[in-house]
Amino acid sequence: MSQQNTVSVLGYSVYAGSRDYLADGVTGVVATLNPHSYVIARRDRQFREALMAADLLIPDGTGIQLAAKVLQGRKIEKTAGSDLHEVIITALGGRGGSCFYLGSSDATLHQIRERLVREHPGVRVGSFSPPYSEKFTDDENEEMIRAINEFSPDVLFVGMTAPKQEKWVHENRAALNVPLVCPVGAVFDFYAGTVRRSGEFWIKMGLEWLPRLLREPKRLWKRNFISTPLFLVYIVREKIRMTARLNKSGKKIVNN
Image (tube, rainbow, N blue to C red; front, side, top):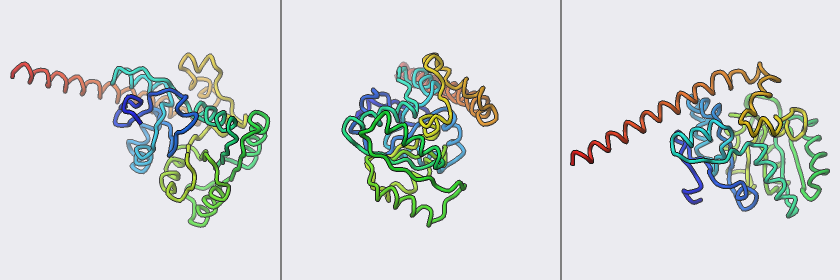
């Protein structure tokens, strides 16, 4: 991918192009980066390695947009996991492609399949609900990988919540015979309708997080009241460093 289509955000190369590119032709691992995942990855080496290894990191959050603007002077489009999912599903429906959902409960996966039949009948869909455990056994991993490879989808969506899903993809990518893998977390619940995504008004205002926080304060308070402020601190600190380096470089040029 051209460097013009990426922007450096606090050490990560983030996609800065159009969503059209994501609709068709992209392969590898497409993951999301948001302020919360950035903060977690600072203290979780495996998670950071998984994010860095992704073939494409999309800017999932206004915080990433802000960082790109403040640090690099680049205006980029926010692309949430739900946006990525919708773009890919629509493209698959247009060409009669296939996808596989790994994660969540059987009930949620059933609702996803029912909605796909209604809205994108041309998409062939498979799914697998893994055990709810912090770490999978070798046998469980083999069963999941076998189910995916036997179905042979064009796209694999993984919904185990971050950072578990990104780590799983990173550890097992070589064994997956799938052109495109997308760890997308809460998208499973959004698409199934078991959890409501914030409305278009909140999304356009850059406040998609607010209705979700009000609905699920116990689960999301750390994300919004700890990770987000920390992320803003990291942006300011990096901006100060960049300015200092620029001033130092400028002084050297004058002295010469």
